[in-house]
Image (cartoon, rainbow, N blue to C red; front, side, top):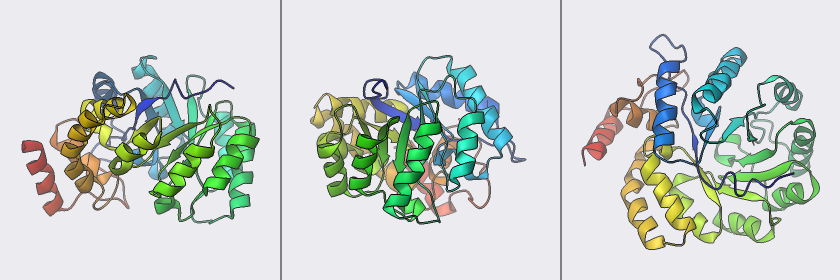
Length: 294
């Protein structure tokens, strides 16, 4: 299996799914978003991530979004497809039926709600890796799933399961992140899944970030990441300092309500979300406007 450490090094953007007022996917706005982030020099796009509101997308919609993303990207950057959830058998079916020919990898969030043991997590990913036509990136986000993929489980998967190629680590636990970076195989990709902690995690040795903020600030965020990867932390900190307030607003209530508020104010998309997610509160929306004015 080819290493993804070079292919997916840098900034990946977990791209939003724009909606029209009637709730349908706004493909024109998605086209604009893809062009916007690519022109901002992000290294790759992640479609159907949690930021794309995939829990509320029907399967035909997911297929359409994947195909349209390929069509617009036109191989300008790699595309990673999100296929994750808590029904292992259904995920196997999706891995076999979703259009993945043009995908570089599959990002698979760990099972939510079921709260499996570490052995259950291992067996879940072992089966997915066997069935997947593309390399699997683990996605550890216990703040959403209520279950942490412990460092030992990540390392075990990396060492024992072929086709497990890396991890998006969003536990927020710096000690856990450093343990993974210390013990992971040389060709195992480790990227941050937490915009606010990306700078110190890059300093610890992560190879990039799959970012929410890069939807709105692709140039600034990817410049920060590249500066960090080049060990120019003075420049990276200068950029990151300006983005900290944006991170705070984006994640104060809900993702992607926060980043969609920024994007709508910037005129890239309409501020439409699917229930149970609602737009940012009025007070925070004022914060978005103030931030962008400054």
